[in-house]
Amino acid sequence: MLALAVLVTRAALRAHRAATIPSPPTGAGVASLSVIVAAHDEVSRIGGLIDSLLAQDHPDFEVVVVDDRSTDATFDAARDAAKGDPRVRVLRVDERPPGWQGRLYAQGVGVAASRREWLLFLSADQRLVGADFLRSLLASYASRGLAAASVLGPFPGRRWWQTWWFRPIADNPVLLGCIFLVQRLRGDASWLIGALAMRRETYERVGGAGAAASFGAGVFDDWGWTRVFESRGLRTAMLFHPGLHDVSNWESFTDGWNGLSRWAAGILTCRRGAWAAAALLVAVVLACLAASGLVLADLVALRRPSLAALALAAVPPTVGVAYCRAHGYRLAFALVASPLAVLLLAPLAGGTLARFRNRILWRDEAIAVVAPPPPPGSTAAPPLTRPDGGR
Image 1 (spheres, rainbow, N blue to C red):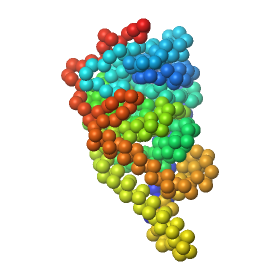
Image 2: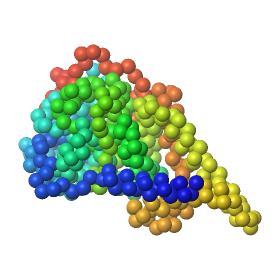
Image 3: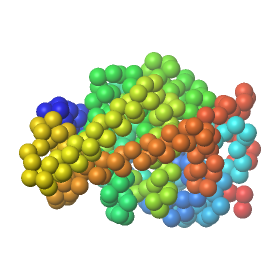
């Protein structure tokens, strides 16, 4: 078991490196680009994203920010951050038609107002580190021959629950590498999580935000897009870029719990074999924890632990060492990997509960995990979208 864990860890790290987007060659990745940002109550974060966008060296891009029914000063903050730059436009959605959930509707509004060849969907809690992020993104997509691709990056949060719970799950190169490894072995297993880019032509061909809403029901727009491309047999991939930082709009442990639970509910809803994979993960984690307990009990009683128990107990520290080396933590952190492994199961439990209840709370909004699609004829360019924000 230990040998298998070491082999999988090494293979996952290699897959992670292969999925990492390199710096672009000179003059590459300069196709025209529209960046769409759907923002809801992001007054404290939207300015940082716009600042990082305006620092990009891409020669032809625009930014369309859609204030999606915010109750704070998101609109004003976005407009102030733009500082009159003509590349940035700020719109507002006052209402959504029936049947729409999440941010897909606002994304559709942004696309309808944009004009460039490529589309990139970002969130207000993302930051672009390095001036060549946009060019490296487009250059990599073109070289890989993808219909669409999503990008994840580091999570720099330093709150206790981020360091000890969220980052070991969402920013773990072994866990992410396993996803990238599965993606390489099975082209139809791609997950479009994170920043998402595609050609405008592709967006229109697959049916746009309305198609994603029909598949994803809004609980997690990334899963809606995943299902759209999967249903049409188009090649996609999830990639990694060290310059895409996610500062997270999860300001508390409760926000983090709801966010990860929503993600897990999306997996259990939209991915074939997700329930079987979840059961296998639970079995592996519990077996490793039980083995760790047996080894500790044997050592306290001055008995020699069995080789099987030692092998199982060594699996979490093996993953923990790789995680510590990736983030510059002391390797002693890996010694507590066994009890921390149970934290992997927490969002899975939350997602399972949400899936059976068919309800998840996100940003003070109750969202159905599975819901009827928007009615036919529902549009993503409503008359209630106004460039003055309705002020």
